[in-house]
Length: 537
Image 1 (tube, rainbow, N blue to C red):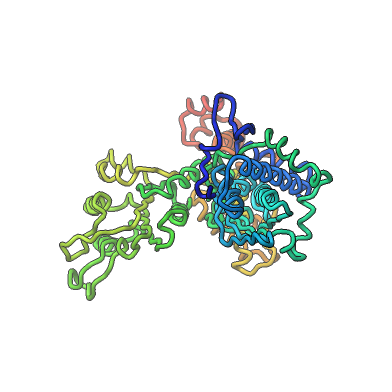
Image 2 (image 1 turned 45 degrees about the vertical axis):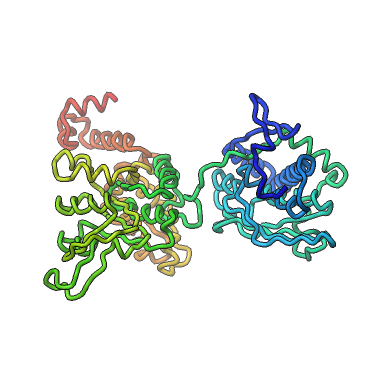
């Protein structure tokens, strides 16, 4: 038997209420449930004790799987038996495992291995409930690899994780050696594998515990939104609305279907488009964006499709358009709602036929670029008004990703403020730049019509005006102070929803008019009956 020939369905039987590995009972566990359990263990015991517990858990698990592989199957040689542990981890959905180096000497029983865990479920568990880690945290994976190899070789083998996704690396990697091949580097890690009874009863305990342990076979979606390549502005989001958007973006990034990104000006539509590009199979090729509203039709056509020399005044040489320049990359058509009917027809052909005709030519050129589009307008409304082609909308809008405005997700404001402040501290070389507590209410209460772009500009302005590294209310634009003050509650906490803001504003106007509903309705711009209804609510 070779490790690569191992198939899960051939060694595990699934029946009603029973999952059986040749007499050993298994269970299927939820990754999300174990992520919460992991957080509880770390909170209760601390990171050091939690590491010891999860490492031993993995160690027992690995030994139990090694015992099963030896008992059930006949292997070509011990190298294949050793590799079967990695194959099992892949099949079980724990992580895809690949060997970068694998060396085993049957004469000396010495072992050396370098592995890559390209999508560690343990890193995903940690990121889901705890967030970024300062050190490598794939303790179960380390324990499993060590326990499996130790059982096979009948001598201690220890793995040490070198890179880890949970601390920002692209993948997780580890090095494994038998105890005779390790130097002093392994000594600080040995205590995490040891327990009072680990030498005498490890095999028995492994088999007993394995009946109760999870089999992490259901692989969760990737949390690329928490990957190292994650777009900075969206690193710290907390809102459910934005999470839904990124969940969908992660799923559709790997497909070439057309995506329409919608949202107000300044919410980060281009940033999301770059994120999709980065996490797609087009990522090794260019990302090219063009603002369709910024160019007149003739120039936009030349920019997108290219032109032949002499095709119009000023065309002194041939020009390759963005669709061809991008190659196998991605083209973002920003502000797609502003293009003319004639350009809409040309783009429809591009999407249908995947080909373009440069200005001044009549021979089509095939293109390979993925096309994304973005708009701050309601394209369905434009279709009903007759200014946007319905067939083009269908082509553009196979998947729609809406980025909610900042005022609809106030829980994201403070994390964004902190992130931008930290970034500007480095950009402007202002040591320990920070937000004064008195400014927080204004940031939370303001409606941010310019969204993240406006937020960043305001913070940069405050940083420049600050003389001691603290951004105070006096450093903020007057419109933010004026517009936010009426929405701040008496206890200093800003309202968290639009409904709450509306109620506070109505209350403010009623007090300012001494309860005069007629005057208040005029100020609010509503009828007296509407005001009366809102007051009753």
